[in-house]
Length: 343
Image (cartoon, rainbow, N blue to C red; front, side, top):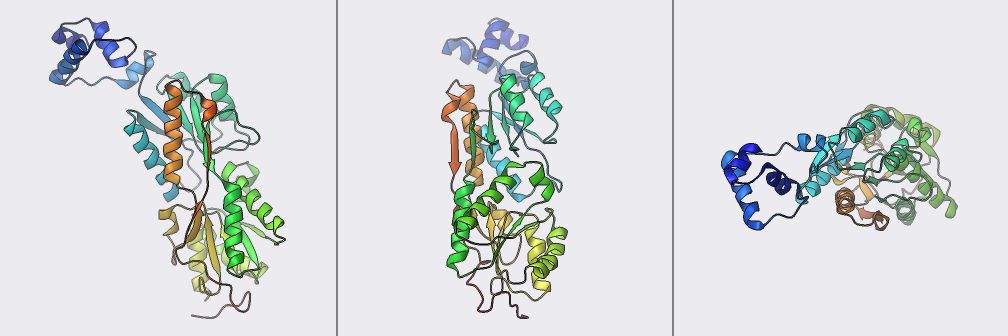
């Protein structure tokens, strides 16, 4: 920075003000400094600026890794968030750590590296949200805690998803419908999307007088495969599944084919909140009711940056309704519910 100041014929503090934007600098002086930076191939050290308590231009995406790592939908969020941050002049730091590790989040805040946080995989009761509120660090969440929200968020409209998906399969003539979700451990831990989606699906079923058995399956291909036979034994009449378990669906579909169950002739599958890429990991591809995940991520980043620019956080709360994408995994109910014919 001292070399830039000498080359531009200004003080070192003037170079600092040009970089930080904390004081007005004439355009002529600013151009001198920028030319000197170019001539010297000088790039500001964002981390050093952060440690000095100045604007870093860095925001963090706090995205805990699941038990099987990131899936295709996760990468859709990450890519969109990164693109939005870059388009608004920020760098995105991906910070993948355990959802229960509040101490790690404390380190993110205390080091002064980031100006704000986008928080994902929100629990219905989430200590990270409480910590960020107490720390007065600007943040937005993709997802919501339980109850009324005072902080900015974007989220899927789970109630609309449950209603639209169930209405869809009932319209196809299915009367025996089941729900395939993620593990019981995630439900017990209050994992927001898992809890909200199950509540929404069961409420939609109750409102229509539909019996809706629930099957919990760990989110892996192998567990999806192993679950198929057990589920068919317990509920042989089920002809349609609403699924909220993207990683397990390919295994479930592969097992169906192994047992001579044709999708969608004998059984229909409808994904909930599945990404486009995730819906294409099984054959036939998964028909789904999903929001635009990229839009969710971009809105969250945009809301955070607007907060950093001084706008009112109370205005930033939005639910995105799902859209139906038919890909071939859902069809009319078979003539004899529960029957399967070898292909």
